Length: 202
Image: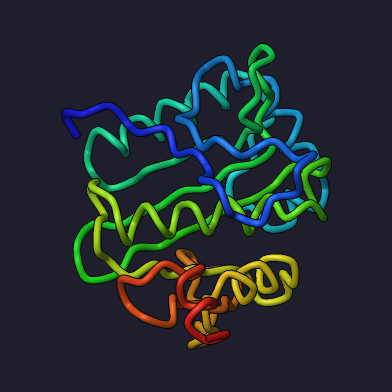
């Protein structure tokens, strides 16, 4: 992509508690290498990730790969931070959209230990889904899908809470897919999950 990767901010009325800063989804930078390595030491996170970042050098290479994906128009990876006026907040997690054509794109995410139980993942997922459905960009108008390893109950709950229906179980197919996975799909193609929940409640 010739244009710079956007920075996605939460909008008003997202249900965030008054004491909680809104989220900002921004591109990863080399300055995030140390927190990336720290987060990747978490045993719970390592259990689900295919790639482990053990050194700052590995983290910088990973950041470069995310930037290259945006330049190629196949990937948009964001660091999840709290949007505050004080300094440069450390990343609380990661969320990415990938797709190389077709009607659907894949969304994946993880959160740091200190971010869990606070609704960070579901808020970031809802914001990314709105970006895919409503706004200009390489994936505009395509249907968001989400895949997670079977047994990752936290990711399953987040997907369902954001309106992503469980549509299939994908069997293990090494080496590309070492374990069985659940496939979740936005219930109404091209509609943000938040809007789907509102429609169901009406």
